[in-house]
Image (cartoon, rainbow, N blue to C red; front, side, top):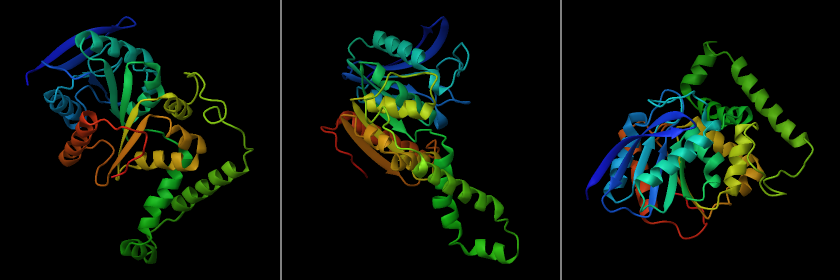
Length: 304
């Protein structure tokens, strides 16, 4: 199949944004808008994951557009962070659809804080019928402390080298004790806090408030999304573990996870936060391709 790679510039509130669209000569009805994480990344992605993903999907007839939102890569404007990219996504979706008039639906793809931005915003766009999110960024202190205790310290105390360090008086227990204390204090605070219904559970999700903290906005956004979700989680990522910790500890998050039409989860035990190895990148692309070409039929969580 012939695929045209089309570099272009589009406007977002007066700033010029850079994009590359991968458009096959025969397009499927569902395309993918690839969103990069913040920081020093751009539309190529870590290890050129976005480029490789776009080319392989386009070879199967799936149109893909990669772009730099404001303040990233080659695009103009000030960097606003993942919590303030609604206008960028809206402009990118409109531009993508103008480049591929045969496309009827769009799937948003992103990892880390790009996944967080997708959870906040996907429900706002009628053309978005699917999301592919990897290791969503939550940056929650209580969840981070719990992950450190469960995953790091619990593993360390089973290692011979750890006890040798203790016997040699080379181990300073204060940081570990402080982490455990913060975790216990956080759990007590949750248990002692007066129970009250959250908007996502009791009264239905409320409109997005840009001034609110990002994590509640992610949860409320997911609760409003009625399309398909592919969740790709790395076994070597503390960020991934923090997200799971938050969901496990919060009934509102658990209910939000049931809102999409379908939820498919894949765990990659050896992958890190950015899927930085070739094996992890290949696995991500294979999972995305299979999910896009064979859409799930019902809202039934699936693990592999």
